[in-house]
Length: 135
Image (tube, rainbow, N blue to C red; front, side, top):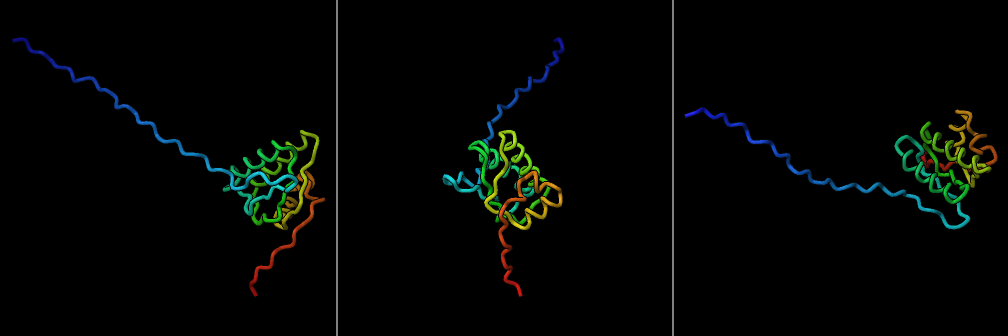
């Protein structure tokens, strides 16, 4: 009897199951009513920069936005970068950003980086800081 060598059975790959796609989070801020400013979030930081950039792209798609920065309490370089890109988009359309209000935090950080004039914050009305309620 001849010796026969049996080769192993070929491996058949298992069919891949499609993973469900996760929906991208929607922006928390929707387009404001006609002639209303776009309200900026309380935090303009690396944690919120992606959503904030999307909001600013949407705002610029409707013309040069009027921004309300009165609620801004926390700003980092990522948030400033998104604001600078928004200002650059406005300037490429021959306009400057317009502000209905700003916060001390936004003004202070922008001034610290020398971006106040570029962002158009020099002429913006400033909101008063809220009392902390601590005595």
